[in-house]
Length: 285
Image (cartoon, rainbow, N blue to C red; front, side):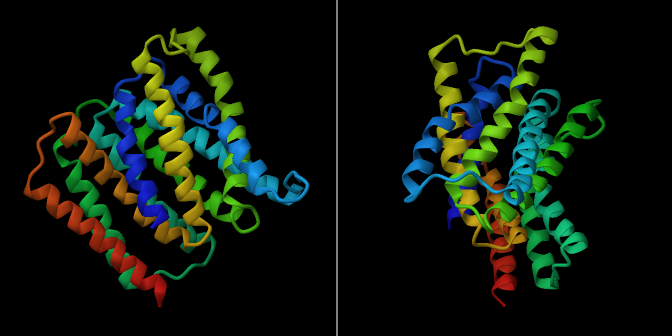
């Protein structure tokens, strides 16, 4: 349930990117940086004894999680700029495919036919949701490449968070991986400002509200719920559940941006939910 709610929140908060008035890399930086003070307080509260830094064995998956999430944010925002919303969303959603494939090849996790059927249903539903925005052969191949890279980086993030949660709490995992992510994004934001003239600081109330929505709703709440759930679920199942991000984005688009939705969208939602149910049934066996 935590991953379900987190995925819906992550999808819904993509609308904040429509209202932002800073560069894409800066948006990623503020998303994690503004969440750090609250994560610091939560970690301090959850630490009942003396605060201890992660051990050297725990730092490796934390660094991988921070680096992969930085890559995910950079390429996700670039893909939204250089290709259609549908292409960017669907290609990023392919992390639901890369995670179980990586687990199969490198972690030797067995995937049953039932799980593969569920994965196919969920990805099929995601494709239907963004079908009207999909575009093939329009010269936006660079944006499509960015979207594909987003999925790869998010795959690394989910797998790394799963490893972190084996020995670390949700608060610790989020705090250290977010801090590392912010440190990685900071120089990229400065380079984007100097080289491309991208704004680093919001100049309007709407812009600030948007970055705070990304930080406190998308990252702190949505990503936090996903990190909590990944610690208790198989990572492959969690990746399939994240197909619900498209449902959250669809709901916000229909409610606040007058985006027309019809029967095919309902079928897509049913396919995604059915796919998740089948995948979860496989994991429960």
